[in-house]
Length: 124
Image (cartoon, helix red, strand yellow):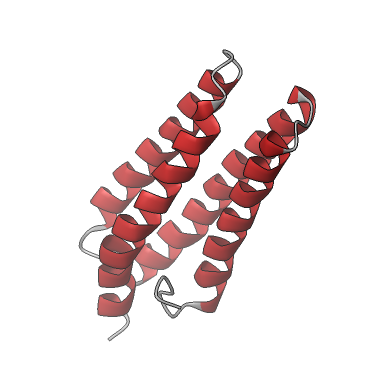
C-alpha cells in the first residue's frame, strides 16, 4: 500500500508490472529457454508502455505541472528496460538482477515522489 497513488487503475498496473518482473526473474532462475524469457521481456516492455500511456492521460486531465518531467522519466525508463533486455541476450545473465534492482529503485523513488506528488496533489 506504500506504493499506491490512490487511483485504482494505476495502482493495479503498478502491481502487474511487478508481477511480470517476478515472472521474468523466476523464469531466469529456473533455467527457462531464451525464447520464453524474450516473451516475458517483450510483455514487460509492452505493458509498461501501456501503463505510461494511461498514467500520462490521467496526468494531462489533472493539468499536472510536472507532466513534462514525468513523460521524460517514462521514456528513460523504457529505454533502460530495452538496454537490460539487450544485455541479457548478449549473455549477461546479471541483467535481470540489475533490471529487478532498477525497477525497485524506480518504484521507491519515482512512484513515491513524482507520481504521488502529481496524482495526489492534482486530485485535491
